[in-house]
Image 1 (cartoon, helix red, strand yellow):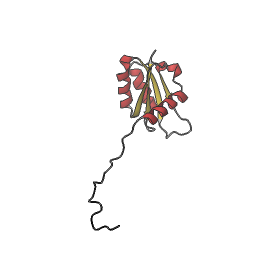
Image 2 (tube, helix red, strand yellow; image 1 turned 135 degrees about the horizontal axis):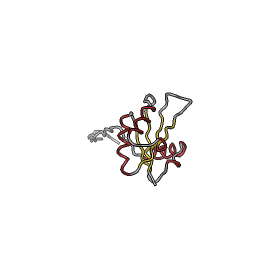
Image 3 (cartoon, one colour; image 1 turned 30 degrees about the horizontal axis):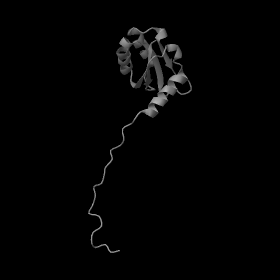
Image 4 (cartoon, helix red, strand yellow; image 1 turned 120 degrees about the vertical axis):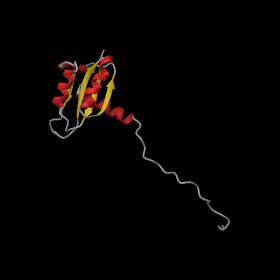
Length: 120
């Protein structure tokens, strides 16, 4: 069974160029799916590509040349199983499980505290 490499792309990137780049890199028309949101042309879009182990780096290079924001590898999944709702749900779960960098936290050192001048 193949793997699925999914990529989240900038809304202004050209998906037609991405399709041409994928096909020029050896992927067939039936090896990838471009999920476009017809309602909002200014929203990011997702692309899924069926890859074998030796094709993952090739597909990642094509994605990076076309302004990919983030990539996700789903193992043991075929292109027939890569419908939009499932891919979107898998991406949401992975994003929630990911540990994000926390902002810099400044820890204030201890002071001398209360001294002998304090009366109870």
